[in-house]
Length: 115
Length: 116
Image (tube, rainbow over all chains, first blue to last red; front, top):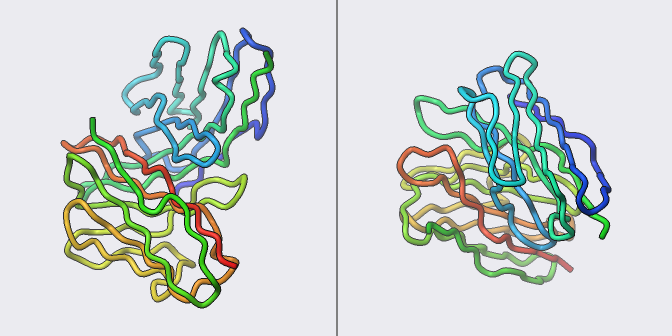
């Protein structure tokens, strides 16, 4: 099955700096890579996703890059703000003919933005 | 927009009792839903795939007789933790795929289960 590794496990940055979180995956057939933000006691919220036919996607201060050859993808947050502080999870899944598959999650990164 | 709800948001029960958690898709139908478990400061681990009108598919190591899943309608899946023990205390989260063939999934807000 799929295995997703994520690092770093914790990341502390100053407000206004950039934050980068990296993930690698093992299943070359995976073709969907979402990123989720989870606040304490809440379910994950999708912040951005990328499909295997795209190398980069950007949404305001958030961007994701994908390197299919190396099987890794990264989340980039620019101009960080204190409200960006949360746990971030990467995930991967593979579309199958028979239907959708569940997501395999990375281990999570606790981001703390210091004001 | 489409939303997934869970009920209850938190529950405390005594060892040996059973607890039912509901996952509902609001404004859309979900033939498939997923149940995840998340221990403190850990990642989400898939427990099972809930299929409307058929048996759930459980991940390796998850006891199907302990975690009963019923997907009785296109908008409701339930997870029943039977004979709960303190080690079952966790955050249980369900998700449902976004309609119209999208790979995106909507996650519920989670249910915090504490077994005393």
